Length: 508
Image: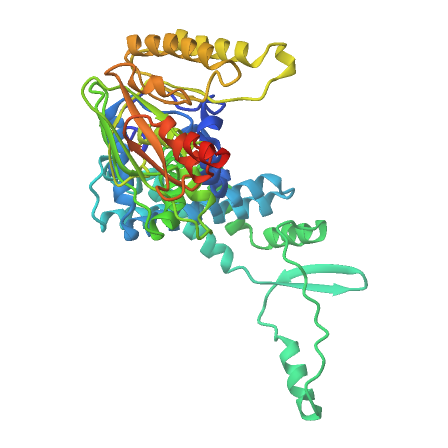
């Protein structure tokens, strides 16, 4: 039976990029994905998180798998299986490093037994839990056929028989005058218990324990290996069976099961990551996705990187909304510095990107667009290696974005042209905004230029609010309203008695 992948419902190009997308640092997604994958380093999950999807059917395929795994019973079985499969890999890796033949084969046999037991239990577990997802249901069917296959049944039966035969081996090691010899066990008594019994009557108090704990190790000394060689000569049948088992069944790991064991950790890692945030009351949802219509909305969204950074803090995470309807395409965010504008822009990008992976997104409800690429332009320090000023660097970077962007792209700009005059910044910004509107892209533009917010029916003004009683206090709420930078400046001046009327009154 054929099973493609738990990450996609059909054949497609491999999603194994070798580096993260360029926009990750700007959106703090490098921190988010790093925190998600750090506990699962043995699986190399980063490439799965570096490959956004454009196919809404595949994204939906992943969403339903995620929803199945939110069932604690389903997740427990998957995690138990993963622990055992990790043990199998450790046994096989250890066997590769061992020097002595039967020692190596013994660990391979143990790995095979754990593997057979794990696969059988996982098949049984998935049979007895409710599954809605096409992915997990198809893998369950694959396992049912696999454990009934002649190859697997032979592996399971013979590994058990060989293990039982080896467990019956009994032998004695006789050490004398710096030499040893090995013989079959013939019912000899175990003298240590008899010695203890004889001297029990002389015991006056608990004796000090002089036993030394020998550290456990996976290796075998040359003396132990020689003893094992002699034992194999004494009992040739079970060791010949071990030889035959290894010749017939190495390698024994099924490629489909190995791929599933790695890919399923994409879901497990993400759900584990957001579990603490959900317990703190932060909302997550499976967004409605569209590859054509560009109407979008988010209710109670938040920056996932910020929430993770504050997970052990008492600071509350502020939730924000946004929407784009009809011809609206670009959110223009204005307001005071340190008011949450950049965090809002990052949230916009994070929501779209995480949705493209098939993950639940940090919001209570959302409808999002399936993009082809995300482009970001955030302020950077001047780099002496480029031998160009900040304004030139801004223009070169924005030109590269405009050349590569398509109508299906998302563009996020944050405080560009801050190094030039207001007149020049406004002229350049209007030119760029015109290009973006011609492209019909979705995006966010954080700016100090209020004029951009009302430039066209395609722009939507969003403003970072301050406390109405104390303009120096940020609320970190971003709301849909006309840009009011002058009103903010006036309220701030009024607080510090610096309005024209207040100054004039003092002078008088």
